[in-house]
Length: 121
Image (tube, rainbow, N blue to C red):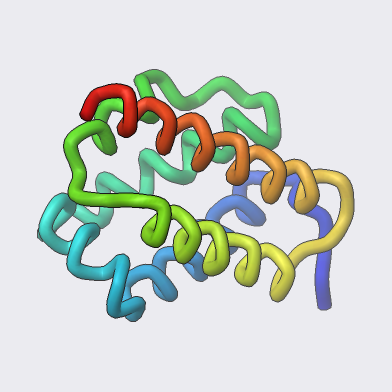
C-alpha cells in the first residue's frame, strides 16, 4: 500500500530500498562501491538526514551535497540511471505531495550536479 512520506521511517524506507537497487545496478554499483567501500552505514545515515531535511523540514543534515560528487567519474548516463531508480523506488512505495516533491528535487539536484561537474571540467 502506497503512503505519503511523512516521517523519518518513510525516509528510511525510501533510502534503504533505493540503495538496495543501486548496489545491484551494474552501472552505479561500481561507482558507489569504490567511493563508499565499507562505509555504507555512515552513508545511509547521511542520506536519511539529507532527505529528512529536504522533505520533512527537520534540519538534521549539515554539509555540502555536491562536494562528495565533484570528482567522481560520472556523466549524464549515471544521473539518468540514478533518477530512474530513485523515481521507481518512490513510485513503488509512496504517493502524494512529498513523493512528487522528492522526484522534483531529485531532478533539480541531478541537473545542478551535472552543470557543476561540467563546469569543473
